[in-house]
Amino acid sequence: MKKTTKSGLIVLILLILAIVGYTVYTIRGMDSDTTTSIASTETYRIAEDSKTYDPTAAKGYKNEFIAAVYIEGTISSANNNYNQKWLLSTIHSLKKNDKNAGIAVFINSPGGAVYQADEVYLALQDYKTTGRPVYVYQGPMAASGGYYISCAGNKIYANRNTLTGCIGVIMGSSYDLTGLFEKIGIKSETIHSGKNKNMFNYNEPVTDEQRAIMQSMCDECYDQFVSIVAKNRSIQYFTCRDLSDGRLYTAKQALDLRLIDAIDSWENMLKDLAENELQKPGIKVKTFKYEKKQSVYDMLTGKALELENAKAAAQLGVPAEVMKSINDADRFTPMYLAQ
Amino acid sequence: MFERKKYKSFAKTQLSGRWGIPILVTVFIGIISIIFSNIQNIKLKKSGYMDTILSGDYELILSEFRAIMFPLFSASFLESLVLIIFEVAGIGVYLKMSRSPEPVRFDDYIEGFNNWGRAILGFIWKSLWETLWSLLFIIPGIIKAFAYSQTFYIIAEFKDVSVTKAMRISIEITKGRKWDLFVMYLSFLGWDILSILTGGILELWLAPYKNMTYTNAYHALMKEALESGRIRPEDLTE
Image (tube, rainbow over all chains, first blue to last red):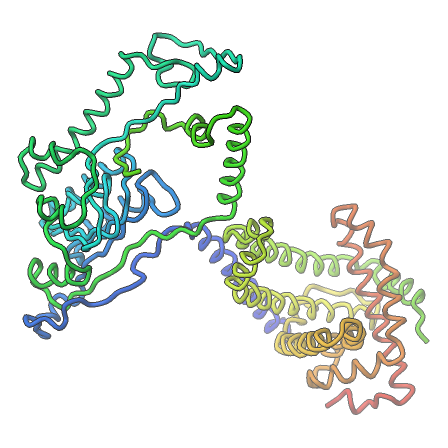
């Protein structure tokens, strides 16, 4: 082969390799979900100015870190601010990570679904079986489901303006439109088996038996909530029941009732965790926050649904909220939610 | 004298019996273009940019664009560089075919890749000038594009000429002939439409035909410039 041909062939092969590499790299890079969180966007050190800080000792734990996990937004399976899968996998991987010395949870949530809140609580309890501490800091709001998760903490801190508490369950609202339909002459019938299959639907009035059924489901979830609060906060069960009438508490009131442990700032809580609990001043803190860009598609479809609901509601003469709730499939979902 | 019809019919005779390699060249460039454009489209779709454009929310589109602008353009730029290397190598094949009727081999195409450095520089230089001119005015930008159109032929044929000089020679030899070039490009419009109807299959045969014609036109332009003394043979050798 001529020399020029050989060198040309080398160039061609290099180009093809570059193209293939570029294609593979791009396709690989696209698999990872670009919308979920970046682990550790911020890393900083805490309590370096502590009196007990010793540079030589600090070298021993220079690779260890406290995980600052942010739980924000309404607790559900997944929405724009919160993702259950991400949270559980983060806690799970932190448990397996030897370098992780403890978790500092930041909660800013009005609560949410019972199922997911309980899952997170149990995941944190499972994490604590390794002997590592979980400290909870309550942000502007840590009500209901937010407080449920806080109970998993060894120590609960709150800001002096935090609103917490709201220990209780919302089971689901029913809108009985039978009267309205009679007035405007609409007949609606759902064929169902058994007398309770069509429970809480808008075209059937609620019977006492159905009320009792829903109330029993609600009471069970309520019991679950009260008992974990009583257990973790070391409060007598029936005293706890009295506190848990569903009202919101300010931080000061919650402190007086032993629902939280201290009122301070986020930094001071981290300092307390690093210095006193872990005795590792100067330890690193890594941030774990779920960030999702709201896609325009979600925005568009959300708006369209709202418009449709509003139109239907206007035609029937019922408030738009009622329409939304009728279309909502969550009639039976129990929520630890501060509305 | 610019004899467009002669170049086209001559191209047909030049290509007869030697369709293989030019078609292969076209296939190469085609495959790579398709890969690149697909990657870009998939990346854009994944990042949500396509949805943003459809939303019509002007501010959102602007901010999204700013976010992806740099990766998008740098990726397209790099892709264009790769494509231009393949194109210049192809031009080398057509030049060889236009000189003598002997059969061409794939080695001739591979040899064209040695020009990769000058191809990249030529592309950067040419694009720079074309962009600057089109920022100024659109129509002069198009006219200048015609003026610079012969740069790659010169780069491929005369290995010793520097890239900037190649562009100056291109400007010189296209003087007075830009309208003829425009008509020549336009004369393939019917073929182009037919090619679109066949979904691009006809392009495999159309591209060699077009390129052969353009190469013939280039030779004629060069010959005319040499004969009338506007370009001296020494210019082409240093």
